[in-house]
Amino acid sequence: MKRALTIRPVWAATILLALWAAGVQSGLGVEIQVDLDPFLDRFGSQIETIQIYRDVSGDRAAYSIYDTGASVITWAAADQAEGIPIPIKVPNGAQAEGIGGTLIGDVSQPGTVLSVGMDAARYTSVFPYIEYDFSNAAFVPGSPAEHGVQVLVGTPGGSPDLPTITGTPIHNGRLSSFDAGRPNGLAAKMNMQWGIDMGELLQGILGEDDPLVALFTGIKWPVPNVQFVAPGMSLQQIPDDPLTPLNESTTAPVRIPLAHYGLDNHQDPGDTITASYNPFQNTGVVLSHHGATVGDDPNDRLAMLFDTGAALSIISTKMAADLGLDLLAPEYTVEVEGAAGGIGAIRGFTIDSLELPVDDDGDGLFDGKVAFSHVPVFVYDVTPADTDPEEGLDGILGMNLFNSAYEMLYDPFDPSGASVRLTFLNSYYQEEIDPGLLALLAPLGLDLPQSAQTIGIPGVRGGPAAVPEPSTLALLATGGLLWVAWRLRRRR
Image (tube, rainbow, N blue to C red; front, top):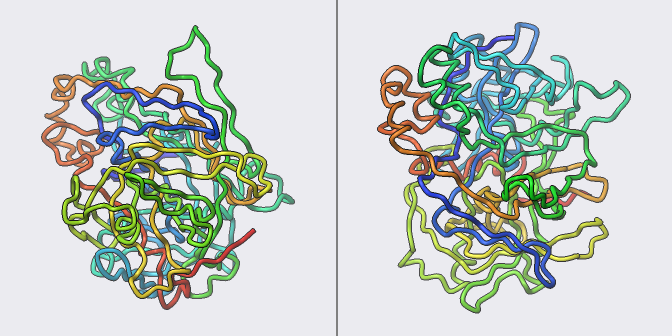
């Protein structure tokens, strides 16, 4: 099957012109110790998918962001303008108050949504067409009459900056290989060290005879990959092996318990967008800085969103003050763009540590912790100021924490309760890519500017200066038609 996809710069991984290593080790009372780099780990990689909306009139495909921080599935206005438009059930029927302003979009007719990882893409010589398969496809099954997914479709006037997003309703689907009698429910297994061979990518763009193809073959663009799998899976440790490269051995897997908040209407969305739960951690997050600690008091637990769509980690202004951070003298600032548009610069700091609880056997008792040191965080209140402190979010656990992770398994249907399981590389290296080699791609930017941004061609705007996160916090606070505000709802 072939689809023409408009390539947009939503791959958040950037080529780092440096060689570095991050140590990961075990210690007494600590399951995993992860030493972050205060500069190189300010941002992490978003996880891209190919998202398909299917109904009786055919398939529409677009690049998308897999985002556990988004409670709905979205379709960008730019993607809606190409090919067969998604049919609309309620024009301007979706409204969300979000970072940067108010989002207004359309509610789609019910349809089937499929999502595949980037490993399913097969680039052809007729760029930008790609071939893809559904061997790892996840889908939310449904019929136009009753069980289909109703997508939030962006509009040029109401939500021009809203990206296409694979949100948490995708987890209510099932693998196509499941037998008909098996219940729905999917987990997401992410290979954080997967990458796209730039030679194969350029072959699809330039043709196999172009000399650049041979020059870049074997050079991998560091992009994570996701596969949707059956619930209840586990991860495997890669042992030390003197015959394999140093950075291929991993820690033993650890399990971080999660809870769910929000509401789920996927069985009967009515005239609203199909919505589902979002994961967060609220039982053992502890942050420390220069002797000050927050989260260690059992009566004052923190609620931190686990957000695969967020390239960075965020703490509230109250948390920053409690840690003694000087908000008038940030270490750095970054311009952040939300789903509703830009919000300007937010302040960044490096704190001493951030700890997450480990519950390996799911018995509710902590077996240890994952302790991150030298943690880059940004200060922003993701919850409205008038929200009840017991019902809001204190921050975001973003993807920058997991740059040295090897695999990540988010399982909302884990038999022991929602969780994310992780393995980390024992030694993590970011390989240097010669800037002179990259400069050879500069002419490509004249003919294919969007693709040039995607693969980081010099002279074409891209990289971490434009961080499209916090991605869809607006979709977590969807008002009116989606009922859910900033209320925490536990689900076992």
